Image 1 (tube, rainbow, N blue to C red):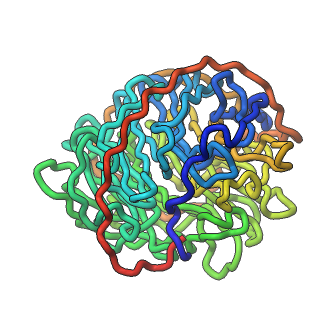
Image 2 (tube, helix red, strand yellow):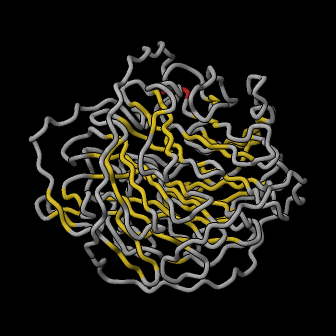
Image 3 (cartoon, helix red, strand yellow):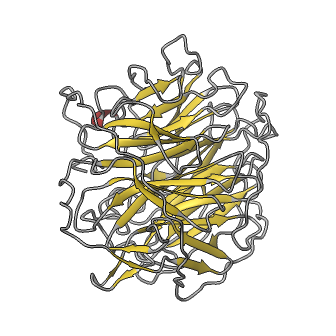
Length: 524
């Protein structure tokens, strides 16, 4: 690992130096599951010659028909220059509008989206030249965005994640918490907090053990939990009980070493220029028996193996003091030539856990991939049989001068299913002789069936009661899940989408020069 995940690259191409053609947007069915292309033009068509990856999704908890996705938008695969793309839907993902990017011709990357309990969307975007980030807000379902913090005003670094406290009874209700890799920081530190919806951010502080490549979430009692790793086999769950108190500088009072059953992989066969997975942490806020359970998922290379990855899950029922033994979610026979990568999770308001990942189990070449899904209704003790929810695609084409299809995918869960954003290469570009990277949306659910229209429901009020005693991971038989029937070839169907006028481009302000820092550990 010799370089950061993000690095300054070439400038934007001059106008007129490339021409983008169109083709019908891709609608890719796989059995009962249907993936819809998100990065389409104003007429709802595929943009031939662009590239898009690293999608992050947000869903309005008051109206599940309103969804937005942000991604790294490469206007042409011939350039490494990328911008903060976004798209939105008002019909639960059947049709998408891609108005443009947050700022035209501004080199941005690492999009992370989240939402609050009232339905506001937030977009954290990294300015690659300085590793500084800023927060944008949408109050109309992702149709337009307003910059909350000045350019670079959210501190940040590569790779950054953030979360919003969505619990009305929490002292930190509405607070935003951000965590990034300290060696590639905008200025210093690894953690920052905003108490005013992302407009201003406190001076950064350090996190014990300098964790990398992980996410964070808030329990119903306002406690903040961070999951991260050391780029190898060490993983931690780190707690702050006072981050919710606006009157103090956050500190971290509990650090728990977690066994995830293997090591993080960079440069694997399915994603040579990127990661095979990051550490995803999520907290149950259902108010039921599993309330405040802490779950961690990541794709790791198992101990003793020298190839391939598995999606591994652990849980804590005692506030992060102890964690279960790692449990392998992918249920295919152990084969270290297979890759189960980009594993991630979402926790529904009713406590169900959804997990999705990319998977090569059905590929003779061990690289062609499908999106797979499983779920648990008993706090992660048992998992439903795995189901393929997408057709097969190659992750090794469409690279926009980066040898990767990104570093992550994301899912947001509700009481009936999960909304997934992922990158795939279903579209074929005849002029290049390759498939191209695009962003897709698919709805997954335990019941299977066509993509449903979610019904808006009020979120239950979480409680801060003590969680149940930790229980060893069981191997009981999971509830059967309908098996999707493979479709040999994805079907392209053109669907017109209304045009939306992009918002005016703000003028970036000058940035502070990051201070010199010690020689970093080897990095991707």
